[in-house]
Amino acid sequence: MTVSTTQKTEALFRDDFYLSTCEGRVIDVLEDGGIVLDRTCFYATSGGQPGDLGFLERSDGSRIEIAITRTGATKDVIVHVPSEEQARLEVGEDIVAHIDWPRRYKLMRMHTACHLLSVVCPYPITGAAVGEDESRVDFDMSETIDKDAVTAKMMALVRENHPITLRWITDDELLANPDIVKSKNVRPPVGLGRVSLVCIGEDAAIDSQPCGGTHVSETQEVGDIHIAKIEKKGKENRRFRIRFGPPETAA
Image (cartoon, rainbow, N blue to C red; front, side, top):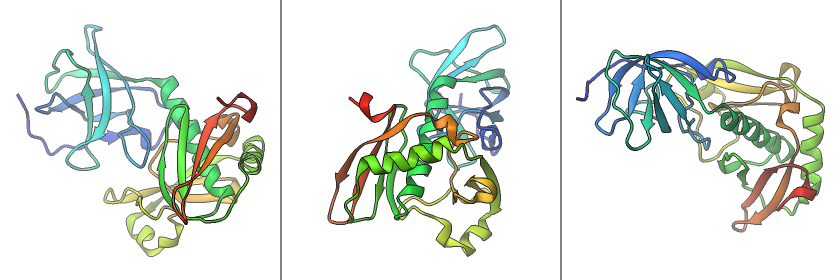
């Protein structure tokens, strides 16, 4: 049975990227089996970052494996879509949500690496996709640039271990300052009343940009990364592929 609700999901990950488990209550079960909780630590797919995987633990200890996390009818509703052949939860049921933490942490490191790349290459971003082992960022640029030089500059930022913090601004403040958005095609998540600014360095000395994804708390947590390839995707578009590990271990 599908239960209609106007309740919203409290997205705990927005204030604590390191929260890997939380208690919640089922407030809706959709026709496709998607589960809406009153609160969750699961990140929903958006802005180039995939949603979290993991499981919901029932009071009897059994698990509902989650295959994808997405937003619902609005961005403040988060839907946990179970894998096939999972038991169906009931509205009102209390559960404990557990994300796949090793996977999430890799995505946090990778997403942060994409921000560092945007510092080293200060061009408009035309597209991006965050992955567990490789990410890509597309820039509106025609210049020729050496991938090893870019890697060296990114790793310098990693080793300097700059703090990474969040600062919240209102939707109106963002609309009044459109130049802080680096992406040409993907707009920050507005409509929730506030937008998070990801700030790198003391007093955002290195970078500050609106982003709704998850990130690590200091640049050294990113670890070894390198630019594996720079591809020409048009006269004025370059695609950078970021991978973990030093260049000599690249496949």
